[in-house]
Image (cartoon, one colour):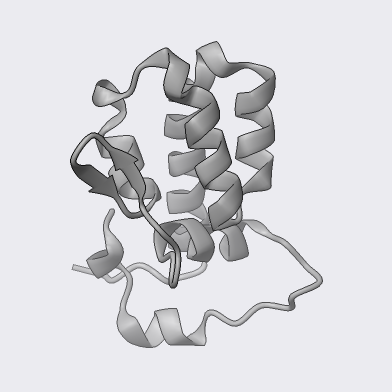
Length: 114
């Protein structure tokens, strides 16, 4: 999934109560981070959660806490907390969280139908 998989009209309709953090809110924040700096992997900027997942092979284990810091900055404190607790498992956590975000957006109809 990439940002193009979600229709622009559906994206604009994604409005959530600030007091309620649900999976859709987190998905919006980490898949479409507006006004947020990318995670810099060498000379390659990682701009969103999908790009993070796609570049997992390039991340060293010692970068787990940096990734957690960045995810917390984007708005996913749940995943960040899990990574802080178990940094050796961060790649698995990223993959599982990506599937969860993708499924959440799919289930509410925010993905384009091809």
